[in-house]
Length: 515
Image (cartoon, rainbow, N blue to C red; front, side, top):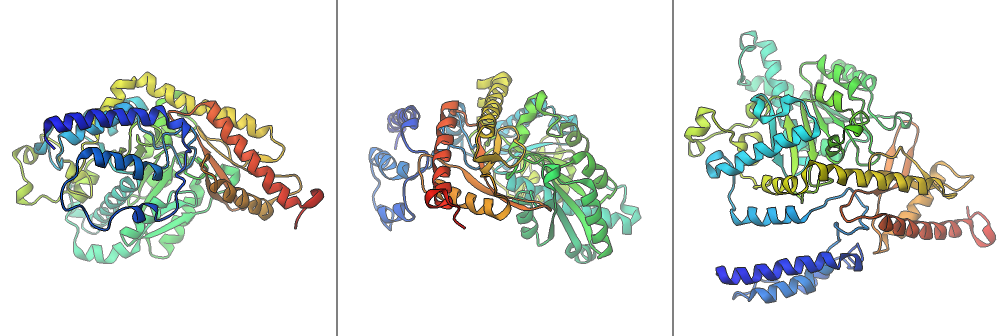
């Protein structure tokens, strides 16, 4: 394809994207296909000779789009939003046009420096502590691919910081060093004893990070009476138990806005416990809810002041509720040396005079991978296109939709809200009179199965695990850019329709309860 062919194909591609969005409401939100549909439709080998792009574009419409679940659809209420905007789409296009691996400043100076600028913009928009500003020269941020990657990166930094501090305890002469060369004997002695903490509501990224590093993870219990938040006394007891077993606590993953219930851990209690133990690092996973710090009215409920006071690192995803297409995970550290001490490996072929002088950031030393994408461009486009005002308005709309939905559910005789609604997330379930516990769980499993068979709605199930009980329920995750209250009401009407069928089957003929 030459420049003029690309120009023609590009115009056609933009037209196709515009048509897709113009007609999005007329297609089912969930892909109506069966496993293997595309594998069976495509040849087993690549074409020997190149094909005209118009043929490829036609196959995208014919073969690919039918297998797409439409996350930008107004009726998408599963998982969490993973939205994009036209500004973000154009940012991706322009980024692809100047493709480069971005591992150091010299690769493309604008890639590194724009990332620093937009991450500092987000610190100010979210009201994060000044230590998280890259311009502070103390901490700073990096854009990674996902909250999973951010948590893993935090865990690597936490492990190395813990081992360095253990080294300094055994070798006092090293305590003033900015970076400590950790002896192999220290690694061999202490690494198998390191333990990480989260709760039963912590996202699986915590456990996965521990598994990848060959370390231990403890999911601590929570109570429904505390809205599923991890409490400080629970953490303190676990730490004391593990010290008694000869283990070394090194990391806590605290959550602001858990996936299952929107829970916000009691960071005001957890923080002092962490500070009392110098080997422990606290990472705050606010992958979904963190962007809501842009709304001052939401900050108290989301432990904003405590995060600013105690977090060693913080993550929120602009690609969830933040208008920026996947992938764009904002990861901040209070002290950038926690990253560079753990991840700076610079062979001769990667050295540059700018990097050696310390005048620039080489982001490869802030992440696990070497190469990286130019993600900051789309975030820059979004923030300039929508402005802080538009960003806040978008968040407020999702929260308002959730509040209206909560009133609808409360008015139902057959459904109940099973956890405190948080921002734009509501957990609900069938709750007919005279039922509780496992009976309700069984009904809601049936309801979830029925909803999963439909293509005009998409919701996800979850289990709320607490010391009191395990509750199976259904999540209604709002906040989509194209969502209106009409979409919410239509989806709820389907939920009521399928719920009525589940209850009719359960009650049996003539209204008799089927046991």
